[in-house]
Image (cartoon, rainbow, N blue to C red; front, side):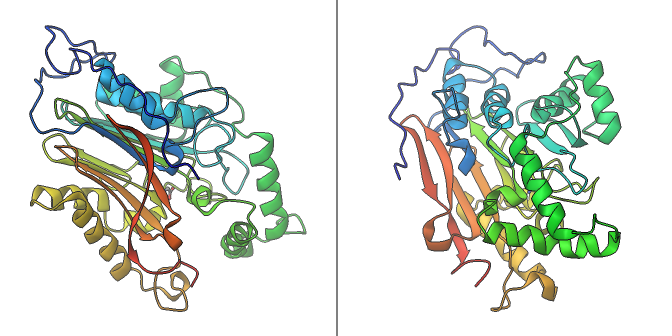
Length: 376
Ligand code: GLY
């Protein structure tokens, strides 16, 4: 596998370097003025799906975000432009349009974003009918006094902001996979609600084992964080959440401190993987606090993974070795552009995350806390 996209020339505009009198910012609110700081290595980091070149396009999420930062665009607008590519991709069954639906076959999306310099945030949970939940999260940040809108209210807010509401965000493929799951759970037309959810998790995991769904797509998600030449930090997370979830289930992705946390002075962290394990410890917040104490992004991320391991004691969540039977990953950058991607497991070093710097985009192996794989 070629892990390196051919090097692109990122032309750094004077605005990106903080030299222009006015910085072009696409957000309504202006980012406080900041000048270039020495020693900063600008970077965009994202989950694996941030590297894929999508059908019809010629540039990945991380490159799009980096290129826009290089042009001097606002960092959060740049990151959101990147994840929008993944949200709109019908082939990515973990995010946005074509994301795997809930147990009732309805696609419900979660997202949040944080703007370091502006110290603002917004999020949406269990949002139906809008392909780009990250843009609605940004609208919550820009146009309301709130940080999180959920369900019907989130959709009504989006409608009032001019977003197009669609009846159904399923693609042929996501619907086909949902029907496959449904038949496994209740061949007699799902008449027993209790058994349906007990059996539901097993049926989902069986589909992963049979290769119908990639493990990453079962929990879904893209997280994308960036820092520019001026040290401005932002982040965004967007997901269709756990496949076949109980309708209304909200994971870690839209929750500030869990699926994403940014402190403009310190760093940013976000996650993919089993959201429940992250929600229990608000681990993106923990990671940023670890960096505030002086720890490198890798060490900060490893501390979060140790918490996951220590807090996972329920037998149904343990493998034969007594270790977590699921995976979770964190994407971490600090205020000078040091970065790390860490995971509970990185089986045979196959799990990777995306990075884009001035040298181009590449896939990097996660630093794992534990040997082997979740199912060992
Ligand atoms: N991390 C995505 C989710 O659990 O929904």
